[in-house]
Each structure stands twice: as structure tokens, then as C-alpha cells.
Image 1 (cartoon, one colour):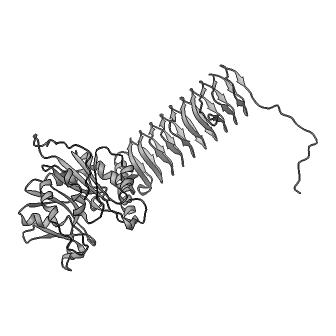
Image 2 (cartoon, one colour):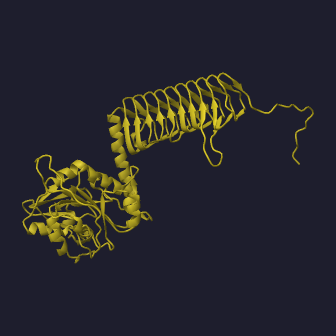
Image 3 (cartoon, helix red, strand yellow):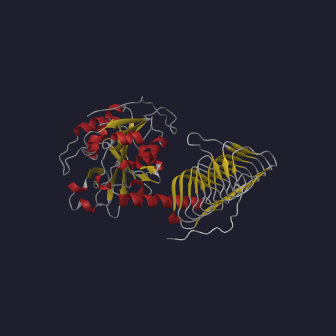
Amino acid sequence: MRFFCIQALKLATDPERGNRMTPLHVVILAAGQGSRMKSSLPKVLHRVAGKPMLHHVIDTARQLGASGIHGVIGHGAEQVRQITPAEDLIWALQEQQLGTGHAVAQALPALPDEARVLILYGDVPLTNVETLQNLVSQVSDRSLALLTVNLETPDGYGRILRDDSGKVRAIVEQKDATDAQKQIREVNTGILAVSARHLKDWLPQLSNRNAQGEYYLTDIIAMAADRGVEIAVAQPGSEYEVQGVNNRLQLAELERWVQRQEADRLMTEGATLADPARVDVRGELSVGQDVLIDVNVVFEGTVSLADGVSIGPGCVIRDSQIAAGTSIEAYSVIDGADVGAGASIGPFARLRPGTRLAARTKVGNFVETKKADVGEGSKINHLSYVGDTSLGRNVNVGAGTITCNYDGVNKSRTVIGDDVFVGSNTSLVAPVSIASGSTVGAGSTITRDVAESELAVARARQRNISGWERPTKK
């Protein structure tokens, strides 16, 4: 066995008792290959609600206030570490996957004797913090706590064995269970909390004499019972909290469950969803009152929607703030933008990172913006590209206008003042400044600054050729 420890450990304080108590350390098992996923990506890096499953579990451990978070990795270890840039993690390598007991043993040297240890799994991403707080609160030197769940169809799970008085005596894995034991519906979730001292005493005593030839962590339950250690039991509010992922079907099932929870939350907070089954939140979404969200809308990263925002079907909104009363029409993509109150966007608009729209602005169909500051009341109605640009108030940008901001090496800005009218099919070659009140004639290519209230026309002189014959097909 090889051990890796990269962080000093600290003590926690129990807010209920008001005195110093044993610290909480969380061990996350994330070493399995997940062969049933049929993927080159380690199983724990597959995403639920836009985030790798392992990251969900790490975030939960942080919310618990863990003094140490230990990740036991094996298959795809370097890839897991690379995609999990967490300075507060203590990594341990399980070179051979010899069972859950063997996996936890890899983290033992980094666990202080006085710690309480919570065992979690990198492919069980949605356990509630409250459920785990309840579990951990029952751990002491004289007790361990086990998270169980009652399932209508318990196939594949270890069964909880109780004595005549109802006390937990052991866990039997399905492959080792008798026919009578397989009828038991209370099953082991794998999640448990126990003192580090007990772990260090019991894990070296595990045997692999079983149907799978592995060292089962669950065997410590029988050891605890034999030594008179109390086995407390807690259960989650929903079986989905403890559902693991072994294949893509289960991944999809968990995704739909978490999305339904998000949809219910949004409706409770004041949003109307055209179809709660066809909205995906892959990050953090906050909503005000009277928000309308049509079907097939996807939210990614951190998004806020203020009161009265309406979003048409098929939109994607990522890391953006949308102010009150804004209307976003169908199939628009908004990424890294700050949108002011009463704005109108789309349909088929694309706002790229760095776009800032002031109040009552209009970005219409087939318009793309990037690093653009658009002043109050300004309009870019259709078929235009505006990048690396500052627009003043009440600017009108005609159809087919582009800011030529890239010369193949460097990017330059275009500055447009208040009350400017830019005619259709215009090219503004940056760096260039169009002063307030000026007008640019349609079809112009502007390469020099335009002064205030000037008319700029830059296009070839028109020639009409009489007697010209159109070519015919040979």
C-alpha cells in the first residue's frame, strides 16, 4: 500500500456543545474503473447537473465543515486529480482495487486517531448535507452510524441483518446472502461514520474469504456488534440521495431526478415553467418573481434572473445576470453577459463573454456581440457582429454591420458615441471612433474617425453600363 498526505489536519468545534470535540474527516472512495459506463473517462468524472459526480461529493464534504477531505483514487488517478483542482484534498492511491475495506485503508495513515470518519463515494453524488449531519452526530468512541435505505427492489445491495431486538448485527453482500436474506428490503448504502480508532483496529482484521475475494468495509459492522459497539442507523429522505451510478442508464435517471428537484424549487420561488421536465439547470440559478421559462432552456454556471424576465424556447444561458423585465426570444445563447432592465434579445442572438447591455437595449435576430458595452436604448436589430466595442445611448446599428476588430494579430476597439446612426451593410475598421450625433451611410467601410454630427460615406462610385449582356450558360 502507498500513502499520500499533502495537508496538515485541524480540529473542529462542536457548535451545539460549545467545546472542543473530535474533528470530522471525510474519506471519498473514487478508485473504481466503472467498466459498465463503457467510457475512457473515470466513472466519478461523469457529470450530473453539469458537474462531475466526484465534485458534488467534495462540495458536500466542505459544507459539512470537514477538517480533512481524503480522496482515494486508482483508475485514471492522474485524470481525476487534473480535473479536480482542489488544494484542500488529501489524495491516497489504491493501486489495486481489492474492495471497499482495502480502499479506506489507503487513507488510514492520514487520519488522526481522535477523528470521526465519514465514508462517502465518488459515484453517489446527491446525498443531502442534512442527512449526513444527522448520521455523523451519532458517532462516538462507543458507537458508529450506518446509513441504510428501504428499497422495493433491493437487488445488488448488501442486506442489513438485525437481531430479535431490532439491533443491527451485520451486513451481508448479495452474492453471499441466503435466499431468506435476499428478501430483506433494508439495504446498506455504503455510507457510514465511525471513529478513526475503530477503523485502525478493525480494518487490518478484514478477510477476503467471500464470493468476490475482496476486503469488504461492511464486515466491520459485525466486528462492532461483537465488541458491544452501538450501531446507530439513519435513513435519507429519498432513495435518490444514496443512488450510485454504475452505467449511463442510472446516470440519466439521476440526472432527471435532480432536474425535477431544481424545477420544483424554481416554481416555488416564483418562476413559471412551460414544462418542468424540459428545463435543465447545470449550475446555480436564482430567479425573481413572475419569471417565465419556456421549454428546452439550459442554464449553466451561475445565472440570475430578476423579476419579470421571460425566456423563449431553446435558449442557453451561461454565467450571466439578466435584469428585470428582459425578454429573451427563442434559440438565443447568452454567455458571460450582464443584461440591463427591459432589454430585448433575439431570437437567434448570441451574446458572448464581456457583453454588457444597458437598460432598454435591443439585440435582435442573428446578431453576435463580444466584449461590447451597449448604452441605454441602443439597438442592434439584425444580422450584425459587434465586438470590442463601446456604444453610447440611443445608437441605431443597421442590418449587416460589422466591427472589424481583428487584424490577424491584434484586436482593437471601436467607440461609438450617443445618438449615432449606422447604416446597413457597414464595416467599421478598428481602431476607429464615431462621435456623437454622426451618421454613417449604408454600405460604407469606415477606416477613419468621424467627428460629431458628421455624415460619413465611404463607398465606390456607382456606374451604370448600358448595353451590357448577362452571360449565358454554355
